[in-house]
Length: 402
Image (tube, rainbow, N blue to C red; front, top):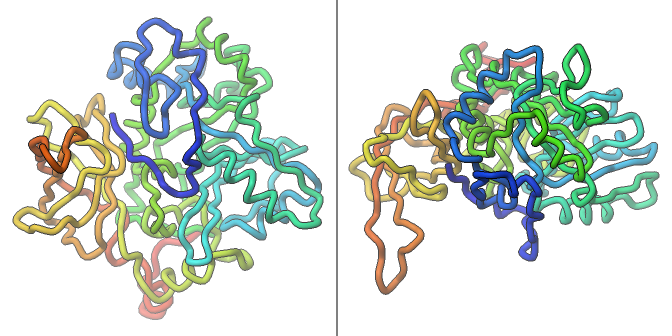
């Protein structure tokens, strides 16, 4: 399984913290944005099946994915919710202890800079971001607080994130002691949130409806206790289920040109009826009058090569010489086989067969390695016709809104 590295707000000097769970027998190191944790523990497909099955479980210890490569930023102080709402694409002022949100921080041009997961504990908002973005986000927020009553701190060294496919506490309380006092973020991807819009071509048949994902913040020194009782799964397992659900990720799908509509982030991270925030003009203009220039697409890949293309590999329409996009995330799914997410130009024919060209990491100007090609069939995620809401509302063709 492979993911493309996100260039937005990454710190060049960032050095990931090696997880203590890398000492578990069979642990195989992940790379890219997941460097520092295990890709798998010896049997990636079995781990993936176990994680998928755990969605419906109600008893026993959950299957756990070490996500300690992610960063954690804590925002405390009485002005935190109103202040962050003024900066963000989402409303955070109505959050109660235990509530979860997702929001975006944009550039003045409307490009995504950060995509934090936010959970409130009654005293602070805890933000989960890519590991390389925790320190830059902390610095950015400190520069933006002015005289407001807020404190911002990078907590990545003291706390860690772990992922499960069900609430690790459930109705009967924590199944594993590591989760007894955990702060738990529930992924909102299962449904359209208040104020959001579907940019998906098939909102009524969206695979995200079945995508249960929980990120728990626990003390870093409790990571090793997960080896006592809980079943571990590597990040490859979690990433395959994410790709299957069409779920974008900051560290893979976002680059320095990405706007929210291109990835269907409007489903969960944008509130179209909130007040002004940086970058809102671009979001509103595309939403009401235009179309996103690129679109996220799901790919079924030809498995006859018995390998996977690298993230970042270029995509071509069959018979055409110019690249139309790139693979952003790729995985071997335990049922569907080789699958991927890609970002391609809006104008690409949704019915066109695509070709992935992986030139290989060993290619150089003097001696290039032979390229490997993969046939790819696309499934629409973001519709080429998405956008122009103002015109479509007049014509009675509005996209689904909550």
